[in-house]
Image (cartoon, rainbow, N blue to C red; front, side, top):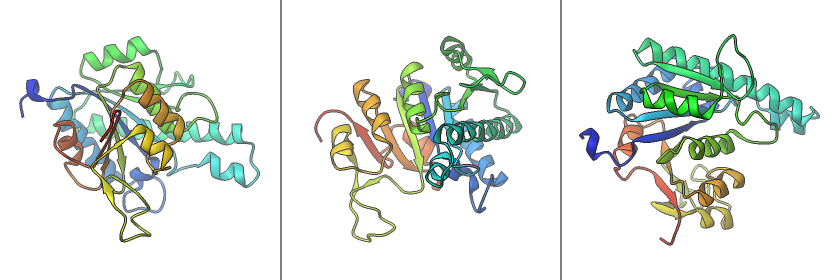
Length: 243
C-alpha cells in the first residue's frame, strides 16, 4: 500500500507490560520484543509516525500491591519506573533493527531519557523518529491506558492502537465463555455502559470526548498491527456514533 493511501498517518500504540513477556513468566522476552520492533519498523518504513505507551505489569503492578497494604501512591510511582525500564528496552530493540527512537518520560530521569515536552515529541514524530512515552502521566492513580489516551490526544494521533492477547472486544471473557461474541465495531458509550474490558473508564471517556478512534487487536498475530494501520478490518474498532 502506498503512503498516500494510508488512512492513518500518526498512531499511538498502547502495549501492556505483560505483552513483553512473550513466552516468559516474568520480565522481557527478547525474541518477542524484537518482533514488535520489526513490526514498528515496517510502519516506520511506510512513513507512519508512531508513538508508543507501554505498561509495567511484567515487572511491577502497583494496584495489586496496594491491595496488599502498600501505599497506592508509592506503588504507582514504582510502576511508573517499571514502564521506563520497558520503554528503554523497546528503544534498544528498535535501534537494533535500524529505527531512530526517543524515550520521553513524564518523570524527570534526565540521565536515561528526555523529559516529556509535547512540542518536542511532535517534532520527533515529524522527523520519523519513534517516540516512546514512559512513566504514564507522571501522576499516581492513573493507568497507562489513561496515559495512552492522553498522549494520543496531545500529539494529534489519527488513531490509538490497543494491543491485547485477544482479537478484539467481546461481550464477555472469551477465555471463560466459549460463546462470547466479538464486536467488529462498538461505541465508547457501549464500552462504558456494558462495562466491556477494553480499557479503564477514564481512558474511554477521554477518547470519546476527543473523538479518538481505538482499534483493539491481537498483538500475538504477526502483521495485524500493520494491517490495522492500513485500514484493514482487524480486531474491534471503538468509536463514536451508532453502530
